[in-house]
Amino acid sequence: MMGSGKTTLGRQLAARLGYTFVDLDEYLVQRQGQSIAQIFERQGQEHFRRLEREALEEVVQKYTKAVISTGGGAPCFFDNIDFINQHGISLYLEVPVVQLVQRLLAQGLAQRPLLAGKSPEELNSYLSETLVLRKQFYERATHTCPAANASAESLVQVVKQ
Image 1 (cartoon, rainbow, N blue to C red):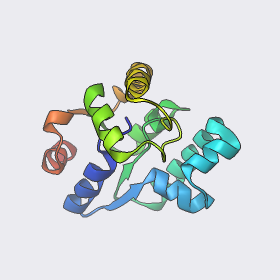
Image 2 (image 1 turned 45 degrees about the vertical axis):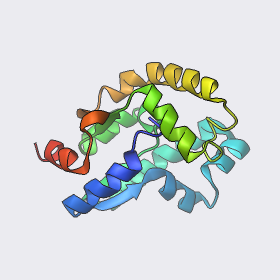
Image 3 (image 1 turned 180 degrees about the vertical axis):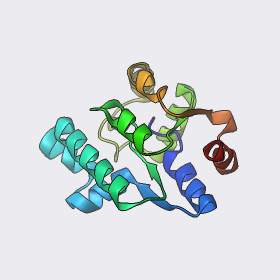
């Protein structure tokens, strides 16, 4: 989910493993020459999800040893979670909604098209509803890592199992 620590922990995990780190959203922004918010605004979420899948395929082909931080919705569209699992190990960073709300409010919502303009109450409702829909995909990850235990060191141990 958004705000779960994918990018932060992903960078740390990649450094400890000696792998390349790729933030799929950043990769997509560089490839498209526009922000995620602009893609959503100009072409819509469906177009963004197609671009996201293309970027995922490119990154998997380009790097043999990489930690890839996807956007929170990426595993939930097309057959992305199956694709991810076929090409590597997937980790679901399981974070309670109340903690996600706190983190996202602290980071600011303006740069997140699905969250921009939401009040704390609306954010809580949106994240709760979204997590219910996405959890079926997240739980198909190779490993579920509860937030309380998620550190770069603990993730290294999970990956090396």
